Length: 148
Image (cartoon, rainbow, N blue to C red):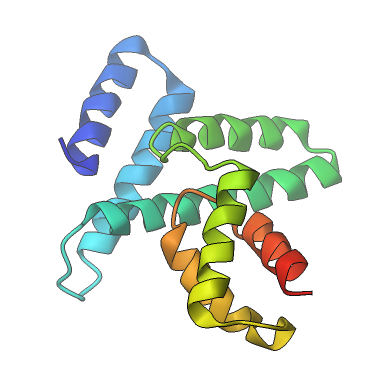
């Protein structure tokens, strides 16, 4: 079952359970998928492309959550947190810091990076290898640590 089918099934389940929070998040995911399918590129929704869409949505929600929390708007922060919880259900299991470090060390060895000047090259390859499994900030911190 692909991502679109899974989302549609979960929307039906949320409607039957009258789970408004999950339904709102699932409809947002479905909307993002439909927009990606009709963006004119002609690309089909692959697993990788679906994960990129979910990553983008997750990042947007986390940024909004941070903003609302700083502004003291707990009512809006709760909405964002509930959507984050639903979106995370469809993301692959995140890697631990040790696993990320191992992958980054492999990338550094492959690229022959020796200093901070090579950070862009290392980040590009590491981001591709760790797509959907690691937060970019964590990867960046590990790359900086290993290159300095």
